[in-house]
Amino acid sequence: MRASFDGAIAFAQDLIRIPSLPGEEGELARRVVAEMEALGYDEAWIDDLGSVVGVVRGGGAAAVMLSAHLDMVAEGDPGDWEHPPFDGTIADGCLHGRGAMDIKGPLAIQTHAAAALRGRAAGDIVVAHPVYEERGGWGMDHLMRLDGGLRPDAVVIGESTHGDIAIGHRGRAEVEIVARGLAGHASAPDRARNALDLVPPILAGVRDLAGRQETDPTLGPSSVAATGIDAVPASLNVIADRATVTLDWRILPRDTERTLLARLRDCVRPHLERFDREEGGSRGAEVEFRMATQRQRAWTGPEEDRRILSPGFLMDRRHPIVVAAARAVGRRNGGGAPARVRPWVFATDGGWTCGVRGVPTIGFAPGEERYAHTNTERLDLEEARWGYGRYLKLVPAVQEAAKAKG
Image (tube, rainbow, N blue to C red; front, top):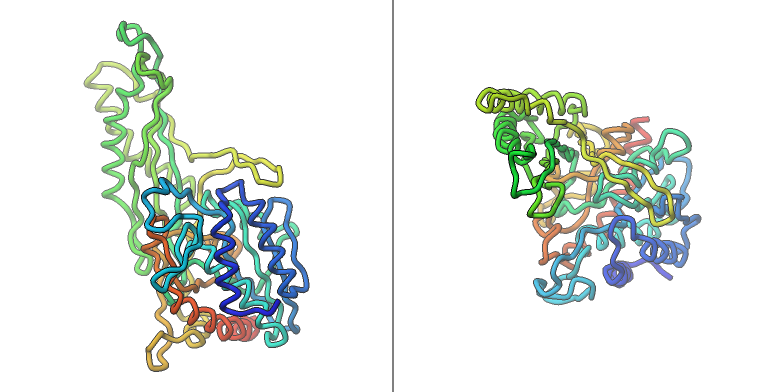
């Protein structure tokens, strides 16, 4: 098989037709490895968590890693889509469906572009598509582990940038505030302690916290919002003995688990103490603040309790790799001007490659961020063709800049 843009789009259509929720990426991973083998990659394998890695060997220059991810978010009600979410329809100049731009379209473009650069790249091109990006980045954390993980000199994340060069983003943390009480029959509330009584002061504290967010000159302010309340037991004729308020917190690269929880306690505790004074009790002591965790199971079998935490990162826009990438990509219809340099709005696996492991990381891919996670998801094919061609310039430029920096 010969690498090409048309081949990449046909490949992307195949990928869209394979649903791949986190932990269910197996069929997709096998399809990606088959494409790499057909394209003549020097190596292609599936790691123990189910992520896909392929290598196109080059010379002795810097190794660049191209990365998208295998998993996707759920499609919701298929009836709400203009085009079926898993058909890979091409219509009105766009590729449609779940994953068209987040991220199976860019994944296919990266995979074919790397093969097209065989014999032209000065160093190795590593193409790594991990699992579980949508739920905290377990796959990338594992791929880049300190003991035996990948060690590229630079990384290009294939999350859509609409042709710009992305240099970072805020991270994302899920945080839980757990209120505890004593369950009882709803017909006799005096015999119980309703955990839901503690929710109003908790939410008041969260509103205070939302108004005290720190900011970064490039990434903008962090933000926090309550996104869910779960009560246990779930039966509606039972007074709840546990209520969990879940927060979605978009964090800055300098934030840590310790500092986040400390700030949350500082904002919520005064409201709980006021509640205790008004109620004449000590219910505020029944509240716990913690990072949300999820038992994650890879499609290959391993399981692990993982904090739902995607780190943030930020590259200096003057970094040689950023400058070289912007020049190589250029601006669509921009008369030779460098590509625009900016952060993403959402989180990516770049938080692991750069924010945690310290490997210079940028983002580049066709596609508009506003279509991500929506039932109108699409990838403009004219822009995608341009993006494919720019990857053939981008990778050698990043390799050269990384070699010079090293």
